[in-house]
Length: 83
Image (tube, rainbow, N blue to C red; front, side):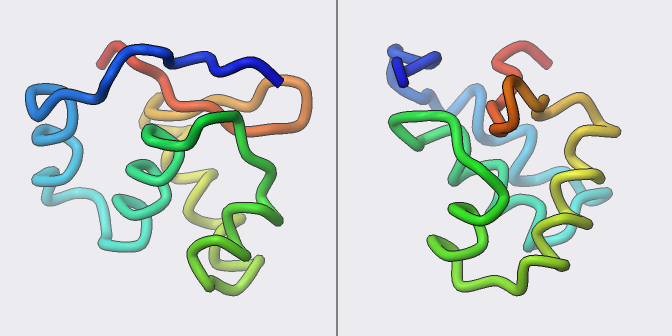
């Protein structure tokens, strides 16, 4: 897979998400992981990398998707870079 986010992650992009009071710590961790990952990630890969229960990751990606912070493309999750 090719990297979809080749540019470095800046604080101006990270700060609004990481300080959002409406997102829990787990959702923030999943989003940050996806944003810095070299490639799009499956739910299983997210679960394994972050040592989270797969059902927890499922719930968290749905919450992030509802906030339009991530999206699913061809079975893997990618971050939205514009908020």
